[in-house]
Figure 1 (cartoon, rainbow, N blue to C red):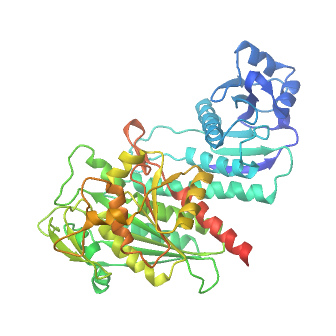
Figure 2: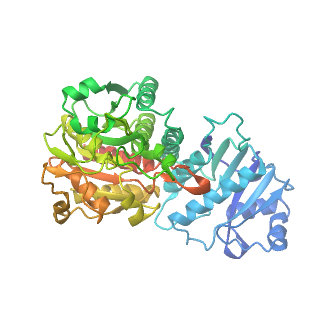
Figure 3: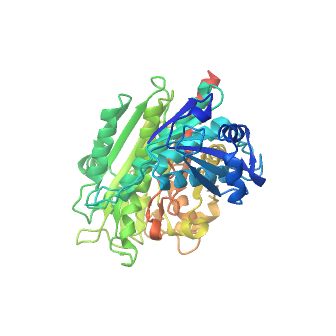
Length: 501
C-alpha cells in the first residue's frame, strides 16, 4: 500500500478514485465538504437530505461521478459531534472509510480529515494512525492459497492537507506506515503453517532482514552452541522434535558505539502440541501462532530499521517446536537453566517460560537499558483480559508506565498486572529450585513470577500476548500485535535520549 501526505489547495480539482470528506452530526459540513458542495452546485447537500444522512459516527454515503469535481467518487463520512471523537472513535471512522472505499473498487483515495478534531490527540497522531490503519488494511494472506480470491484494488492512500504538512506530521505518517509494515511481517509469519514456518525459517527471515538493512546484524546460535552455554531449559523443550532449535540474535546499531541497548526477547514456539502433556485436539491448529512473540520481535526490528532512530536495539528469538516423542522431556523431569537454577517440569505444556528463561539470561550479556519479553504465554491471560489488552508485568513501575503510554498512543493497549512476591509461593518444588507451573490460580501471574527469577538484575517487563496475538473464528489470523506498542516505546526512548543530550 502506497501511503503518503499531500498539500491539496483545491480538493475539487483532485483527481482520484475516491475523495473522503467528514460530515458532522446533523449533516453539517466542515470547510472541505462545504467547498466541494459549492463546486458540485449543492449536490452534496441534496444527497445528505435525500439519504437522510445524519453524519453519525460509523455511517457513510457514497456519491458517484459528482458534478464539478475531478474525483470519480465522494464518500461522505460521518464523524459524529464535532470535537467529540476519542482515539477509538477516530480509528473506527478511518477503518470504516477504508472498508467502504475498498468495496467500491477504487484504486486510490484521498482523505481530507482536517475538520475532524480528536480529544487529546493532535494532527500528527491522526497521521500516524492513518499510516498504521491503511497499511494494515492492505495485508492479505495468500502464501499457501493456490487460487487466491481477487483482493481490493485499493493501492494508494493519500492524507490531504489544506496547508503544507509539517516535518513532524510527515514523520508521524512514516512512523505509522513503518509500524504497519512491521506488524504485517509479524502477521505473515504468524499465519504461515508450522510445516513452513519452522525455527530455521525464522532464522532465514532474520538473516533476510539483516541483508536488507545495513544497520541490522544477525547471528544464529545452533543447539551445539546452546549446549555449550548450558541452556538446559530451552533444550529440554526441543528434545522431542526433529527440527533443530535456533537462538536468533538481531542487532540494530543506530545509537552511539557502546551505548547500552534496549533488548526484546520473543517466544518462538513454531508449533506447540503441549509435548508429553499433550493438548486437546480441538483448536490445536492455532498453536502455529505460539511464535507470535518471536514474530513481533522481527516485525519491530524491521520497523526500527526502516525508521532509523538513534538508539541501539537487540532482538532475541528463542525458536523451537514442542512435540512428544521418545526423547521428549517428561513431567517430573528436572532441568538446569543457563542461570544455574534447576526447574521441575510439572507440565511440559508450560514450555514458553522454559525457553524464555534461558533467552533472558543470555540477554544479560548486552547489559540492556530495558529488557522486554513478548510471549503467547498463558491461557489464563486470555481468561483475564480477552483479546483487547496484552498483559503487562514488570519489576519496574517506570518501565511499565512507559510501555502503557506507548500502547495507549498506538491503541495497541496493555494492562498492568500484579507481580507480587505472594505468588512466588505457588512455584515451590520439593525436587528443584522452582517448579514450572504454580497451580490453577493466577496462571498468568505465576508464569511472570517464574520469569522474574531470571531477571532480578534487569529493568524488565513481560508482555503476555496470548489473547491479543491472533483472532479466532471467521477472522482467524495473526494480528501483528504488539509491534506498534514496541515500536512506539523504542521511538520514545530515542527522543528521550536526544532531549537529554
